[in-house]
Length: 284
Image 1 (spheres, one colour):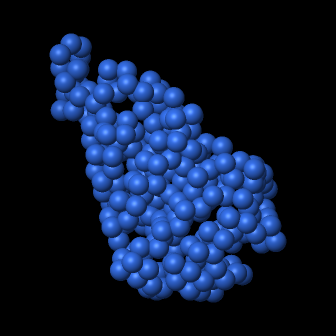
Image 2 (image 1 turned 120 degrees about the vertical axis):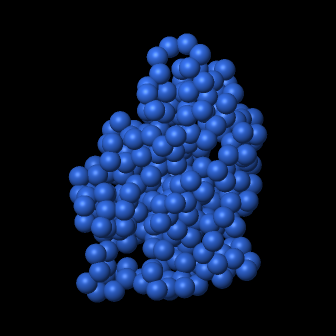
C-alpha cells in the first residue's frame, strides 16, 4: 500500500492503524524487536491513559491474544495495552528463551521495553513514566525479573506461571539469585522501591507438567540451584511469593482451581487485580 500524504486519508489511516487494535510496529531502539498495541480511540482526542505492558510466552502468539484479551478492559478503564514481540532466534541461533532472562547477546530486553514505552508515550502524547506489567509463562519470567530490576517504573506487576524464578537471594548469582545484579546490569537491588509495587502472582493449581521447566546439567540456563524453588510452577511461584513478602512486598496470590497452563483462563483474575490498583491509584 502506498504511503499516504495529508488530509482525510492520513486521518483515516491513523484511525485504522494507530488506534484501537493497532498494526505491528518495529521498535525504533531495536528494529529487530516489535510491538502491537490496543489504544482506546479516545486518545486521539487527547484523553489521558494509563498503560499496561503485557509480555508474551515462549510461543510469542500470546502477544496478539493479550492485545485483544485486554482490549475491552483498556477501553473501559482508560488504559492502553502494549505487547512487545521478541521473535524466536532473533540472533540467528534459533534460541527461544533469551528474553526471559532480560539479556541475550547484545540485547537488553528490559531496556528495549523501556524504550518502546517512551516511544509510544511520545507518539500518543501520554505520560507513561510509570506503567503496569503482566506476563504469563515465559512472560512471567520476564515480568518478575523486570520488577526486581526496575520497580520504580511500575505501578503494578502481575506475574503468571513462570517456569523458573529468581529469588531475592543475596547469596546466589543471577538468575537463581541477585548477588551479582549490580555487576551484571549496572543497577543495584532496591528493596524499598520493590516494596512500593502492588504485586499479583497467579497460577493454575493443575499447572503441574515439569518437562519444560526442569533444568538439567548441560542446559543453557542450568546452574547450581536452578531447580531448588520447587518442582512445579505452583511450587516455584509460591517460593517467589515468599521471597517477595520477606522483602516487604504486598503480594496477592491466586492459585486458580482446575486450571492448567492456560493463559486465557487467568486473564479475568488479572483484570480484577489491575482494576483495583487503578482505582486506588486514581483516587490519590
